[in-house]
Image (cartoon, rainbow, N blue to C red; front, top):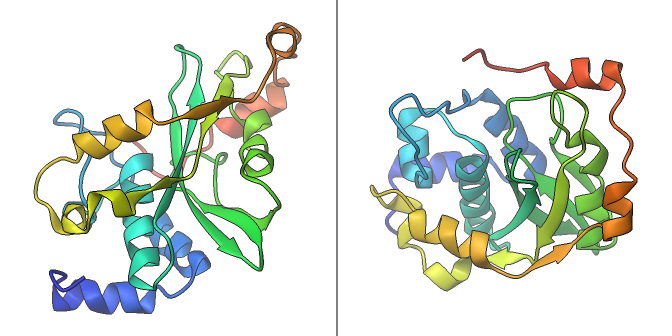
Length: 202
């Protein structure tokens, strides 16, 4: 982490737990990508002061790595009609939790109370639906370790398309059988309305 600026080191040092990282991510405005798609490094994300889910996950993973934790991402994929979501994994006392950057009232932070990755992923299942209530989550990646990319990505000024592509192409496990997919009930109207609550206006 020797390429971090003094201000970045101070920030990373201060964010010494998953809960503190999550609280900080919540203060960063959502990146609606007004000038085109981005996949920014933690440095660029902080300089721009906006993040979408993958950018928030990369920043959270970098901070965890600074504190000697593994920088692990988890990719939750959907049907073609919806968007995938990426969270940062962490483990405490043998249980999994997740840090999540989202603009909505759902798909948020998960306490470290889940015994398995599948268990944690399924905690997002009932919150993952379209505006008509159709539930769309389908697969979950294996824990994706960012150590394989070295540390240059943390302070890069370039978009991290290679990391995004590698995560997308990494091994994923299905969450449902075909019979379960065909038997899904739509979310209730009250759930749909709650899902429309956002932190930041576009």
